[in-house]
Each structure stands twice: as structure tokens, then as C-alpha cells.
Amino acid sequence: MRYIGMFFDSSYRPCGDVFTEGEFFKSLEDAKRKFRDRYEFGWRSTVNLPDFDEDGKFIGVAISHMSLFPSVTEAAEIQLYAIGKDGRVCDDYPDRLLRIGPLGGVRVESC
View (cartoon, rainbow, N blue to C red):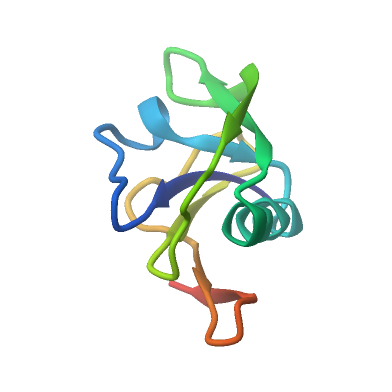
């Protein structure tokens, strides 16, 4: 399953919604790996910004760029919104929530 994710942390709150501030992840494993790398290493990470048509359907990646993620805290989370087979994003409520677990791994919660 593909997802649009919204990254939150104690010092960062996006101003927009999944369509204006979201990040494309090709799978749950992709989202977990990037989240873990950002937390553990503050690594440069490729951020894939999604593109939508006028009806709000996901049509691909609009822009990919490298970003640094310094000082990601234990309070960080990524809310994942599923992209349906028809390209629509269910933006009413997240499908999954990624959080940092007590041992530093990525915990996946169903919403």
C-alpha cells in the first residue's frame, strides 16, 4: 500500500494538510526506514512531494529533494494516510501512525 505521510515533532507542525504538506511513501517499510533514519542519524533523506490532479487523486511524485532532519525527538510521529487503488487519499483519519518506541525502534499503530 502507498501512503501520504504528515511528519510532526515537538518543534515542527505542518501548516497545511496532506495535499499541501504531505510526503509520498511507496510502502509502510519505506516510511518506517526513513523515519528511523531521521530519528537515529538526522540523515539526509529524500523527500518525495506528491502530485494530485484537480479531483484530488494522487498521480505521482511532483518533486524529490534532499532534506536534513536534525534533532528529531522521541515525540516525533508520522501520520500515514492510505492511497486507494483509485488514487484517492482517505484524508479524514490516518490509516497508520509511526512513533518512536521505548527502545528507539519504530512502532506502527493502526488508527
